[in-house]
Length: 138
Image (cartoon, rainbow, N blue to C red; front, side, top):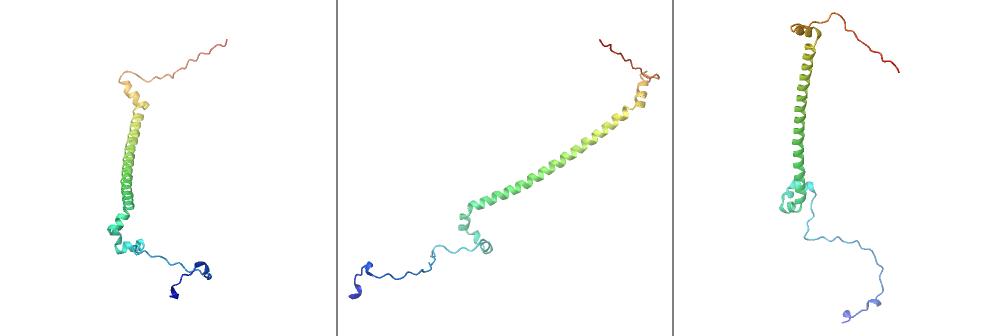
């Protein structure tokens, strides 16, 4: 029965302490997860657990894709509107130039003389005279 004796802790001489490397504890319930590329290649990202764990991220990615598509359609609509406005501007500009040209042709001196001669108005032979009145200084 000597082997089962009570030994006081204070009476044992202390042994020099050496640093032992700490062993990593491995949880038996967690599997080591492979990186994202391997998950995509082997199809693990399609499992229910993966989808449920990353549901917020998946919704965010879907939202970004919808915004990207909407931005594309909005850009196309803006370019169509700008093109229509440019075409309308060109038409209005050409109408302005055409109307201005017609007005200049109709108001030329010889055309006005022809039109007014039918009404009995003739062009004067004598030049116009200007009457100037000088003011007297007080």
